[in-house]
Length: 280
Image 1 (cartoon, rainbow, N blue to C red):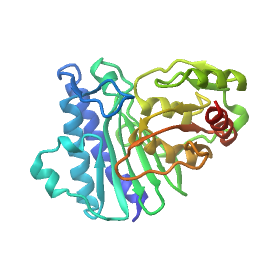
Image 2: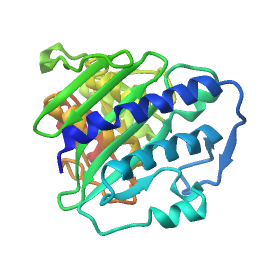
Image 3: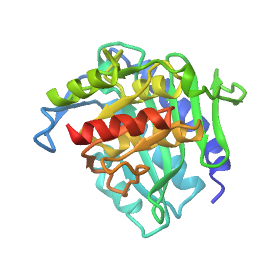
Image 4: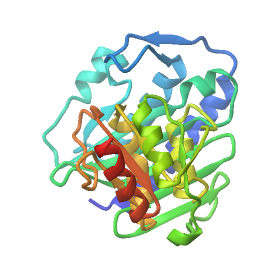
C-alpha cells in the first residue's frame, strides 16, 4: 500500500472535518458515553464526532476499500453503514479519532484535532499518521521510513518538520491524568520538571512532544488511538514511544487501553523514564 499517496489523498477529508467542526462549534450539545474501565469517569462526545467519523471513513473506503477499520465512535455508526464497512482480515487497518479533545471543542477551545492513521497489523506498528488542527489550519503528517511533515493552510506545502537534537529538549514531563504518586517521585529523582497540560487533547499535548516544546509524556491507561497516530510522528523525528516493557509500542485493531506509554524525542529520556516508572 502506498501510504504517502493515501495520506495526501485524505487531506481534503480532514479539511472537510475541520470545516464541519468550526461551523458547528458552540451549536451542539455534549453527550456522555458510559465509562469503559475503572480508569474513566465519563467521555464527552457530540454529533460532530459522528459526522467527522463518517466523512473520514467514507473517503478512506473510497480510496482503499480493502482496509480493515477502527474508529473511536465506530459503534455509533448507523447499522446499515456499519454492516457495509464490516471488519476484514486485511493487513492494513484505518485508525480514526474523529475529534480528539472533544471536551476542549465543546468548551470553545482551539486545541482539538482530527486524527487518522494506518496500522500494519503484521508488525503492530503504525505505518502513517495524520493530525489536523482546524483552528490553526495545521496538518502534521508522517509516513514510516519517509519522514514527518508540516503544512499550514488549506493546501499548504508539506515541509519537513524540524528534527531537534536531544540536548535541545527541555527536561520536562507533563502532569497527565492517572499518574500515580510514585510517578511524581520518579520524575523528581530524575530531575524532570512537572508542567501542567495545555489542553484535554492528547493530539495537542503529544504534538508538543513532537515539536520539542515538552520533553516527554508518560501516559497510563490511555486508549491506543490516543497515542498511536502521534507515535509514528515522534519516531520519524528520531524519538521513541515505548510500552511498559521498554519496547517500541505496538497496537492491535481494537486500540485497547495500555498500562503505560512513554513518548519523547529523546530515546534516552524515554528509556530513563520508563525504567524509573516501572521500578516505582
